[in-house]
Length: 140
Image (tube, rainbow, N blue to C red):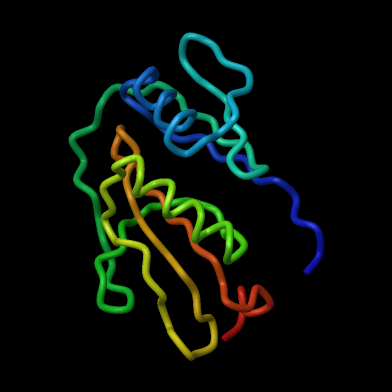
């Protein structure tokens, strides 16, 4: 695979300080620039920005994938296999409540991957995953 350019994603949060603590202390993102209304983070080499937005009453939507209710929308990072294992153990040790516990999806098939889903304090859904063979990231 070629070198990946960092992506930029900006997400709404209704409690800037609570989410700042979550991304810094639970997800272990390095904090960058900030203002009274937003905070930049280094999310595994990508730029994540949390922006204050008043709380929404919109309910989380899900789609069925592999017999599980996958939240939509969601975002995250594809990690190396060993990094995924270490990260999932770290999240468990910090008491993160999973929507979908870490597990292996499509075991023995094309696209075999480890995946997990959880919410940040503002209700944004995150998915982190790792492919057994990263060359199958876009395999059909």
